[in-house]
Length: 328
Image (cartoon, rainbow, N blue to C red):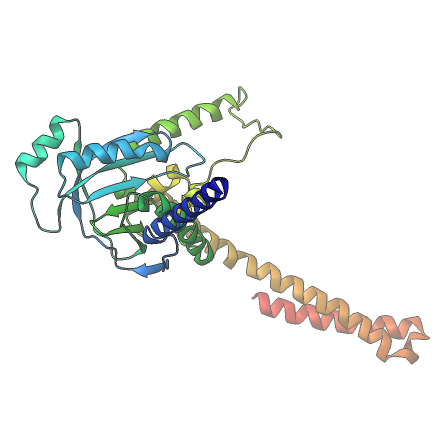
């Protein structure tokens, strides 16, 4: 009897545990509807106090805790630059002010005292956005797992160039946004410096692959270069982060536009010069078709070689005459 009672007690406890955990997961947003849209972002231009970090994104919790302990009433923010499967670089901090407001000087000095840096981030007109309920500490774990795969699919399906991933933590909701413009303005100085360093290393590697004349030596076993459009935001993204140029190309986009204008003008010239050759080829083809038609239509004259050759010669002369007039 006692064994049966003990078994029933264990079953009741397990059921209560499952119900409690399930309720907690549901309350934390496990089945919340995720709606991805493109439109105005959830924040305007902001001034933030931040720390730049490298390493797995799952380790960012300590930086969030430190930032929130200094300014518990401020909204927290995180900017994530890379695909989590690659080199992970991000910033974590607090929003000191938004829009036309000015940051509290004492609070700003307090953040700077603990090693935080201050930076202004721009306002953008459009971004890929969504939100997730922030009801329990577990929401911070469930949010990325539920949100980022959908953002990545949204960006990929629409072939958007969107990065980096930005998270804004409010008291009851987590806002996710991926800018569609001015993306590199969201790069903190440390991130820009790292990108320049990466570019220099890639350039030095390229130099090693050249011979004494400076010609490139390609290796068949070489890997595929990293493309941030396929990973940028995807944390995507996005992905996507974003889907997509390599970061070095994004930073040099203005120079590419100049070269593109010059190349477009050159290509237009080449198209114009090549049109006369195409017309000449078409006339020559018509000339050949005319000779064949002469042979088919004048079957009787073909019996006498002189008659067929005379007709063909007359048609050839006529076509050449027309061709000469067209060229003039």
